[in-house]
Image (tube, rainbow, N blue to C red):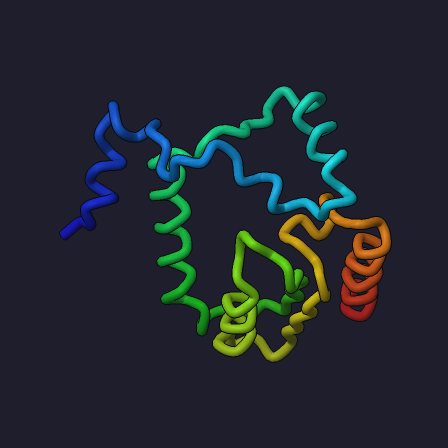
Length: 143
């Protein structure tokens, strides 16, 4: 049996309705001193969407999250997770759970103090430098 939100999100009139009555959450993905990048992105990127999360988008995200949560133990590919401790979009506990549950023997979680969700685009330059250092060091060790 399908869940109520899944049924509602398939109704043509409802699928484009805002899931949350807030217009834009993208600002939480940027550090205070990197908000200029968001403004630049909004003006230069014609594909940028900054409206409310739509019901069908929410359904897709929840469906993907549900699918991942039941298959974490099957992940055997080496992976690196970089997660900001000030991320207001995704809880670091989710990254910690993936590392704990994944079957991969080569897995690493780096928590970046004060980092937000957009570690590679919405951060202070020093944090972004650290992100790229960690990423390239991890790749160099395996390639």
